Length: 292
Image 1: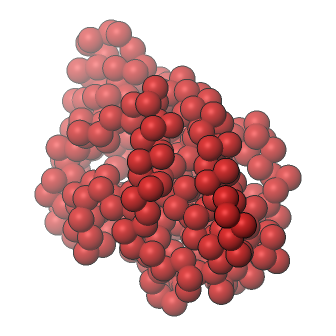
Image 2: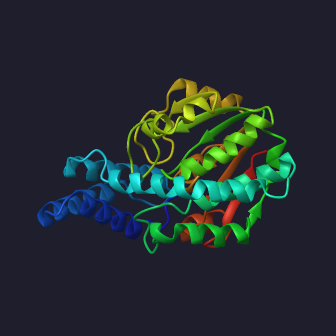
Image 3: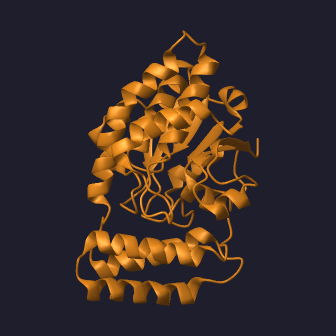
């Protein structure tokens, strides 16, 4: 996805958000924003990848703050809330003795609703204290874009690129049905902390490496997937996948720049620019298959 004229405003809002998470030193917050604005001035121009600009800005912010993980506490909250919602989601997925195709559809829906876990997106409030009620409401609404029936026939060798903490626990419901259907899963997490994205620490904490067949990282703390920094085994996994599943907006922003696939984008459209680029509306729950 190319950067939109809306993006700089939103990016600076998020830089401010993480700076305040990291420090109560107002001068340091100012310095972080000024350094990020300098990066924005150097990188922003029409036609450039949104992920390129956002990665450069967040890396500079982390450097000035001297903080490798400003979102650490919020990530822990997300995981706690998701672990409490997980039994509710599982009950809804399996009620009524559905067949495997229907289980897959319901699990994807639960995982997409889990993409609600986010922090610092302008105009968006995760409201962890009421997430269980939010989950039930969004789950009842269903998928606004639903290509799960096509996806279900493509699960032989899945590369699954995760997004946020908390959300990754609900992704486990999708892993379960992929494995039950005889598929293999290569799970991909961030190579180092960035925003509230899942890393190898979350994989080990919740034993997710025991559920999937292989775990790889993106090779860095880039927003989404930076192909220039990705390890060779990840690029090879993309080439050999029967289906790539991309969770969240950041992964969409970077992977949509490449002609790879088949790829299914699973996300909530929390950003007007992403929604517009996908030809959708804000607030949609999406499981969209492309390049099939």
